[in-house]
Amino acid sequence: MTVLQSSNAVLVQAAYLVASGLFVLALMWMSSPKTARRGVRAGELGMLIAVCGTLLHSGVVQYDLIFVAILLGTLIGVPMAFLMPMTAIPQRTAISHAFGAMAVGLIGAVEYGKLAPTQGAGSFTVWALMFEILLGLLTCTASVVAFAKLQEIMPTRPIMFKGQQVLNLAVFLGALACAGVMIASPANTTPFPFFVALALVFGVLLVLPIGGADMPTVIALLNSYAGLAASAMGFALGNKLLIVVGALDGTSGFILAMVMCKAMNRSFTNVLFGGFGQAAPAGSGGGEERAHRSYTAEEAAPMLEMASSVVIVPGYGMAVSQAQHRVAELYEHLEECGVEVKFAIHPVAGRMPGHMNVLLAEADVPYDKLVELEDINPELPQTDVVLVIGANDTVNPAARDDPSSAIAGMPIIEADRAKQVMIVKRSMNAGFAGIDNPIYYKDNAGMLFGDAKKVAEHLVKELQELAA
Image 1: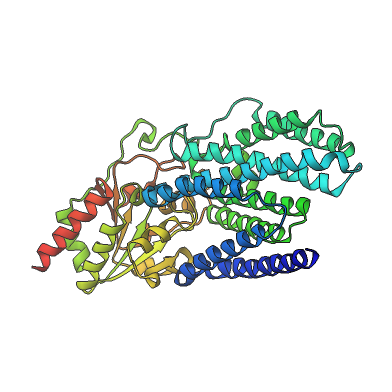
Image 2: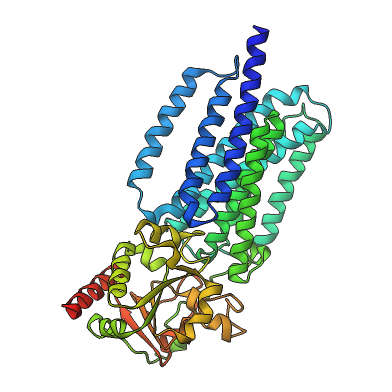
């Protein structure tokens, strides 16, 4: 029996080592669109090996409960994967964070009940459990609020009230005080219900003042929190794989959040406490309607066909209308006409990091046609036509030209510097930042009003007729 247990222990550690290596490779490969599929497969294989290794723990696993959990997870996960549209991926990501963080918090609560009576004052295990439970529970409720905002179940604008930051600080300090009491006296479980309640409430308060414009950063940051909570769980349970995987998840999420903040010229403090996105809706113009030019598809198609270079700038409007396949058709027809076409990708376009890359990859747009902001901007002054499809804040020249703008300093795709700009949009309304966009009124710009999918279809039809 001892030999069998020793053999199992070796197999478990070997499985964890292989899984850890696969997770590292997955992150490395997913950093490039060309190898992203390989990265996903490596991550899936790593997770399968990790789960199988965990099931080898003799005397620990109740296989009947594991089977029920796998069945329930499959019944929920498979329909979500097949039925959920690409436009809802940000919401799915947020709710996945909520489920994962809830699991971490619940496991921490159970382990605290089991281990606390056996621990001494200041025990590292209790420290780890408090950190795990706090991060897990606040990430759970914060992710639920992020999901509700993304799904527009609740207002996407920042929800602010007087004394909000003082209340946030008081709730957080209250949770820390409860944790401190339990660390000093692990057997004293009296503060535990208050600790749990304060952690859950703090998660809600944390995301309420954050507007829709900052959701890409929030999603990345919540991913980091969930990873750090899992890593703390690994320390509490003595599980090396959880430590490694949680650390990878936590650091990669934090780095991604930093990239998002840099892309918006924002600090973490400003994102979390700034209440960004409260400005009045665009189009008001202070009560004065400004002149703008508008095109029809019949007018725009010949301009695109005669251009030697076209840059397409996708945004969340393309995602909402699920226009990526029609946009891919438009790209193919322009290429057939001898037009050089590229796609300009802003890091925070859409509602999650890499949103536009995922949508265009789904439509089989070649990876080498996707150009990052820093690389495309120097080319735009020589570009004949920039076609903006559902983007707003990411092409707003106020970020560059107006120091008083709410998005001042934010790196943008400088579409207005092109020879001609066409903007596909339903209306003149503001984007997530809630501010007016001067590009609408530029002399070299014109609006193509309508649903992005229908406009792209009309442009394709017109190009086909011109080629006939």
